Length: 90
Image (cartoon, rainbow, N blue to C red; front, top):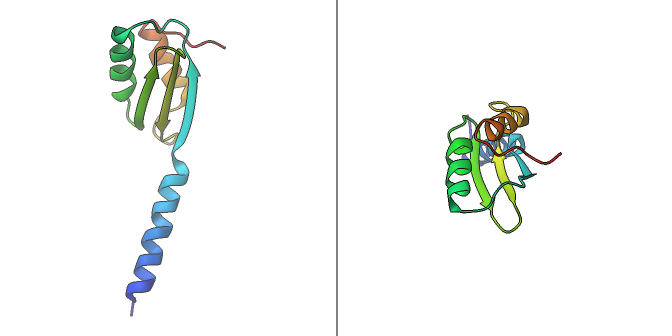
């Protein structure tokens, strides 16, 4: 018989595995200058499968995002930024 406590432990363990897969990155994007940039970047990256959140910071010229690397690679993220006209600083 599967007890409630065992079910709770299994659920917590499953959530931990899911959370462990999510990565966070902050990218330097020197061409960010206005709200149009923010909307373009957030829209393009937010549309990628596996991207959980996008936060574009105008003053710091950075894009901070959380994503699942099993669904999208950092190379795909960088390529998307490039296609939108916002190459990252290397």
